[in-house]
Amino acid sequence: MSTLTREPDVGWTFTGWPGRGLRVTVTGGRTPTSVDTAELVALGERLRVAADVVSAADASTVINPLEYLPGVPWAWTAFEEVQDIRIRATGLQNLARRIQDLAADLELQRLWYEEAEVRASTVFRPPVWRNVVAHAPKRLLPARIRQAITAARASDALRVGGHLAATYDGLNSSPLPDAIVAQRHVRALGEEMQYMDKDLLDGSVEVDGQRVDVREMTAVQRSALVALPWLARASVVGNRGLPLTTVVTAMRRGPTTAADPTALPIPGGLSRRGVVSPVPPGGSAARAPGVASALATTVGRRVPTPRSESDVLGRIPALEEEIGRRGTGAVEILRTTDAEGGRHWTVVIPGTQDVWADGENPMDNETNLLTIAGVRSDMTIGVAAAMHQAGIARGEPVAMVGHSQGGLVATQLAADPVLKREFRISTVLTAGSPVGTMTIPPGVEVLSLEHVQDPVVGLDGAANTAAPNHLTVAVGGGAEPASLGERHRLPTYTGAADLLEGLEDPSVQQWVARNREAMGAPAEGVRTDSMVFEIRRR
Amino acid sequence: MSDPPICYPAQATGVSASRANILAAIDLLGDAQAQLRTAFPSGWTGTGANAYTTAVLGLLHHAQGIDRALRMADRTVVRMDAELEVYRAGGTV
Image (tube, rainbow over all chains, first blue to last red):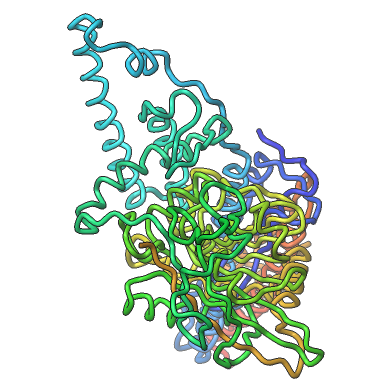
């Protein structure tokens, strides 16, 4: 038996959307909640028994009109009336279905609660044999031990391969939701992989010249860093052997004030080294590896003011089309000016566009691995630079919106102590983003939309922390996905965002109100301008 | 609470198969309602528990509507049985 008693903790909203069969689970927020998952099991069992009994009642609701003919000529009419009690919308068969649906909701809810209770371990305890293998001079080791080491390394590869195969199989055959299947397998894989890189065994690892402490990380975060060099090596093929390390952010629309945007490094811009990048005396830091440079301009293109979260997510397909044409990353920044001249900002970040690493487009798997590990990625640096370029002033409210990787980047920016001083990021909406390893600082309200059949949201190997300022709205039900990963696509999440306004959950409604205030959406007489920034490595 | 089945004079000689079916359905539905009444949360509190409680109440309301419809169907079957009895006795309905 498990009991959640943290206050505030988790909440649950049952929504009976007619014809859509969608279920919504809300965790986090400020509504005090206490949950005993054993009680949920018992309630579910009672509902299933009730559904079975209703089905038996349905089977019994039958009369035989032939017994009454020809003596009772209206027997057919009576027969049809009795049949109607079974099949009409308010009839027995639908009642049995509704009870079964509620039992299924409850089961999903129980699974979600139980996953939320599993806290990812951050214990750093590499096996002794790995340290011996890493540090002992090979020539001094007896031949048998050297053979054992070779065998152990081979078994590493086999174990990883086995996990991946089991994950794929589980996603295709397990009755559990794909998000939970992926989360459990990734957690298990993380336990296996976390010490497979010998550089990481002493508690820190170097990423692009930056020393990263791994001792407080989860196993999945450490594994992401282990996988990084593997991905980089594989990407040499994908990128035709071209290694790229520097990010450049260039304005695509609106006038520029310089011929070469990289000549204007922004003091206060982020770098991989985790510090504010100063302008070096007498020179530009823009071309140094890992430094984001930016071009100052605030002129954009007028667009309709987005009124809702799904309106903002709906801007991503056009952005992705542009990215596809150019082969670089992109982010859109919307500036909404109200009648009094107050400015509100919405930053829209699409998801992964490139499966490789270290290519021209930083919206790739390298960014995914780094952000999951909590390390600044080129994309994070690029978006921060774009925000500087857009002219977001200190104190002006900013709403961040991201799909998949975009949500990871948005959350990382919101949690960044450097940016916290620069921008007032008020709210973050993540859609299908594995943000379970992220820590949300006070002052930022995050709402994560997750579809329970989307395996990508489980790639962090951990449930989102049910914090007062981190709400997770999990959507389930509806038609079975036609293919693995179908539920990760944007239409799933624009549909889920459409539900937010109708959810009878005070925490969700508070978040929606705050987000729309940050976007400047509720005001009359507003004007919105769009700025699209190209983000590329070179 | 479900009402007890009504006993009609026409049924004094026995219960037809159709009526037995309907009465059994009423009984079973009563059992299902009793089961649903035990499915309210006790230790679980918060927004989710409130929403769940509302959902169970909705199911009970649904079941009560069916219960009324089944009792009307029972009365209809009683009338049919009575008319059939008269027909078999050679009278007119």
